Length: 172
Image (cartoon, rainbow, N blue to C red):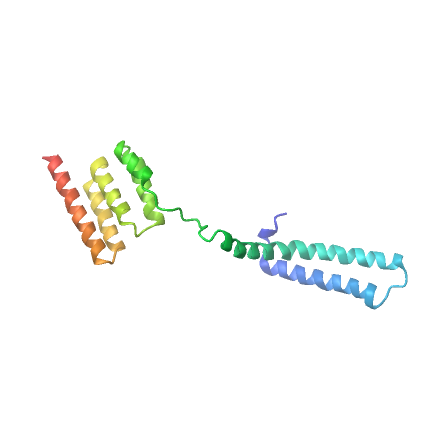
């Protein structure tokens, strides 16, 4: 049975009950003082069983929290976000593998939405490879909403105008 599917409240209640039963068993042996070793053995065995239950229910989540906290010291940049790399996107674009290039640019934008070159590359691939001006314009509008800095918006608009002029020159 996988313990991660148990509700946390059920795990806590089970651990508290095991602690209470184990504590009672130890109290019977050490405080109340069972007179013989044979009489103390079942109580010690029950206390050990309760200790195992508590360890299974509580130790793993605590170890996971502590391990995650400690791992940040050794691998501070370890996150699910990959670093920015245009190598594949640009290579696919040079090889005219437009769909693959578009997918790579989209991955960059998904993980790093403020990467202006990725937005420009995506528009360029749509216009040059797919020749879909409406789709490129819709992505241009989305990209405009993404950037609030005036410099980025100006760069985006200038590149968009260049791409549109290039598209018109090819169409004539």
